[in-house]
Image (tube, rainbow, N blue to C red; front, side, top):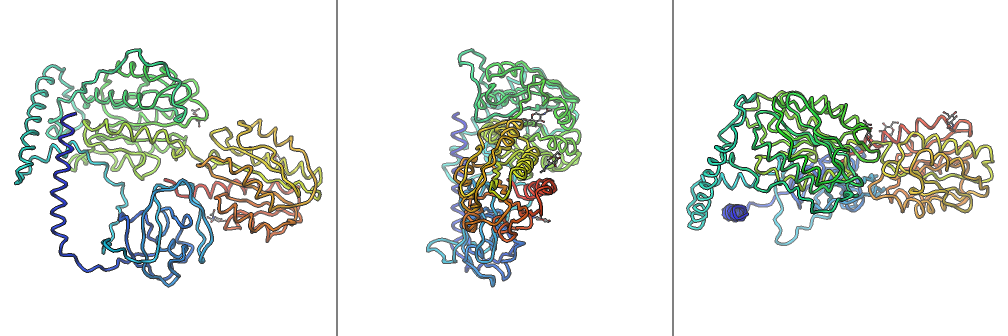
Length: 630
Ligand SMILES: *[C@@H]1O[C@H](CO)[C@@H](O)[C@H](O)[C@H]1NC(C)=O
Ligand SMILES: *[C@@H]1O[C@H](CO)[C@@H](O)[C@H](O)[C@H]1NC(C)=O
Ligand SMILES: *[C@@H]1O[C@H](CO)[C@@H](O)[C@H](O)[C@H]1NC(C)=O
């Protein structure tokens, strides 16, 4: 505790000195020149939080994708968003860009000749305004771009602080701190000596070359906290906001040694404590791998944090190589079976802990795991330094293994000593189930509302066909309260909610409910029906669900559909318009989400409705797969 306060102070102090120097350097400020950016530059690529930039002409082109209205997801083209928001026209010019927080949803709209798109959520946003430089703000002349690679993992402050003293400082204050620190270090070294002489020597037949030097300073680190096994806490049902099935793959290779293995177990225990394991929340099993993997316990073995922590404490080091690829393959084939406690409606997550780098390949096995819906996280500890990289079988193995290469699924911890800092961020990401991209598919992640025309022109027999069509579409989706949900509205002049999204949770119930919808018969007010569906159906959709509206009509509406359709599009509801017989193509195209050719379908008679089922499913999935996700 004390040591970390001093480290913190030292880091602050060193940073302080550094920024003073920076300020001195900056006093001769160069004249501000406005940096140029191209139309295709996305805001997320630029690290600066506020900047003025110059856009070229021609950024109105639809190939420069823009997401949102007013506030744009940073995945958007900066200049495209400037045109969309009316700050620029297609002839280019200067703009002021400010980054703002990520939003839980972005609504697409058509504005100033640019069609922007909707996006459920993004990590960062930006706004664009006319370039009126604010007094006292220095705008960068050169923009800083993020590298295409994953940004380096959070530097381990501890290591830095300890490495710092080797640089001689001239100021009086730091010297005093140095002395305190040296004393601490001496103490640590002493502890290391005594502790290591007490502990059994770690296996000397290390299969991988190791830089003992850079590790030796922390050899003595043994977590002091004993794993708490006391039966004090009441048995929990688990955190219901984190219902995941979790497999922890821990590194049991000989080179790890008992001490690091112990740190790994402590980490596991801390994660278990933070997760709040229980039958109504997360469940977790552990697989230890060396040459070969073995299940220590499955999802059902220990169903509360206390028992699980006690079991973790008893795990012993397996030894062998570090065959993480083989372990992932094992987990894909064996771990998430129903017999092992796999629950439907709980996403599968695998966290791979790895000392350094794997001794086999992981890319292919990880791909197979992802394709079976397993969300893979990688935590690598003490990654290969430059002269060790020659021993790695695959460069960038972690990026090749995880769901997305954006850093969300991988942690790179610089020393075992800093591993505990990963507990909270890891738990947060595991539990944010809406962002577990590997297990999200076009078939399990939407709220789908059917808007069914029940007007007199349809007739009883054709109405049955329409219901069959709705059932056939619904059948294609994975239905449960956490996967895709289905709702339905029937309309004539009037509207009625047949069933909402939270009424039925199984496919059988949904199909039954669709079959039981009674034909109403009456006029055709399609605009009013869309308004009604937005209020009565989609308002109750969950925030992170994709919202799909599938409207089926056989004729021209008596009311105007324009405003209703626009409201749907603005609310981020992706609208499909299916017309039969007398339906008007122009009206279908207005109702349908842009581009209309992907969202509007027409068949000349009810008996041909079935032909559009595969096309609609295909388009829903194509659109889903083309959308960027965090
Ligand atoms: C485990 O459950 C998930 C749903 O939570 C499912 O997608 C997956 O197919 C199941 N795995 C096995 C092997 O049954
Ligand atoms: C629904 O599916 C059944 C069985 O595949 C098929 O016979 C029928 O024609 C389909 N009907 C519609 C309207 O899609
Ligand atoms: C629209 O459909 C075309 C092919 O028909 C496809 O190339 C395009 O990607 C689709 N656009 C969207 C947004 O789904």
